Length: 171
Image (cartoon, rainbow, N blue to C red; front, side):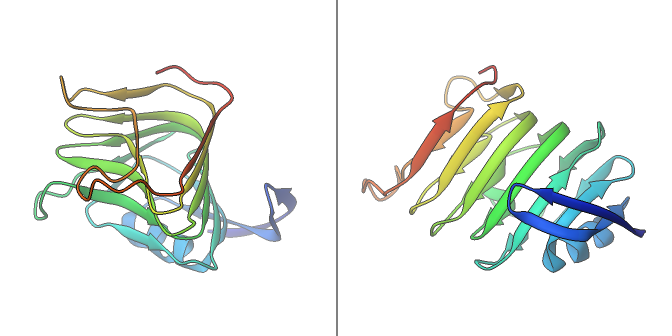
């Protein structure tokens, strides 16, 4: 469902709000960019890439977004963000060995939502990514190795020019 609402939100300006309540609708709306609002709980089974020139505000609208993909190897991401993404107002759960969000190659995210991973890190900031946390609760249930926010690339041992700003939230 697409409806008109005049808005300017964190650099995403427009008149359309796209409401989604399925994985297919969410993929299409994120690919188009703009303000995307969940109309109900949604489960993702495949990763979604956010292009370098794309800007997305994902309003969970007090619903739950769950990423559970049993066909890929450990280290999969619900969102691979190369552009700009904001996640607000709800709960985002990554089930299994999966991250909720990964920021790559200057990708930027602002998060004010509850985020949890059952067996991995919640958010990965790498390769020039920038993360701003303004609120929410961040939990990794992967003891002892899970991290709420992981920065840098431990696999290559190289530091990357990542940026992390924490203005609020519970870790």
